[in-house]
Length: 199
Image (cartoon, one colour):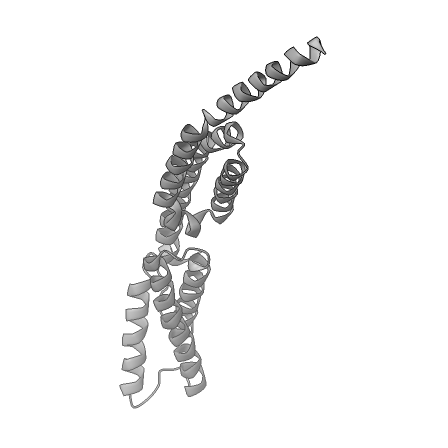
């Protein structure tokens, strides 16, 4: 009986200490989660366009920290939340690399395309106004060149829209189509394709 008499208060004291220790990290955990969310939200809009996989990883980490917090696992929530800002930094670094690569690829692929389209437009107008088509050119070839030109214009307009809006997933592929059709139109019209545009 004596042993039990002293064991119960001792267990109660241990329980109180444990609860106090856990609750002592409640505010730090809440603060860490808020810091993590703020850092993520500041970078999320752009990151979604460039590194969606890393965005999901950070979102999962934030959800995990919140879930631990709601269950009262404040230590776990704090540790999880404290690691998130580093994940956000890595995400931002990856975004910067992807943006740089996109700008470089865009410049390489699209350089000279507006000038090519303008030259094709002028050539088509000249041929349309001419009473006789030059040797080697007939209506069928002229129509073929016109079709390639129209595709190039449409794809170029779409590529510019995608690039300016930050929709990066398909922009390079669309730009390539514009360039290839412009080159094909120039070849049919027996125009000199600038060497810088030839791959």
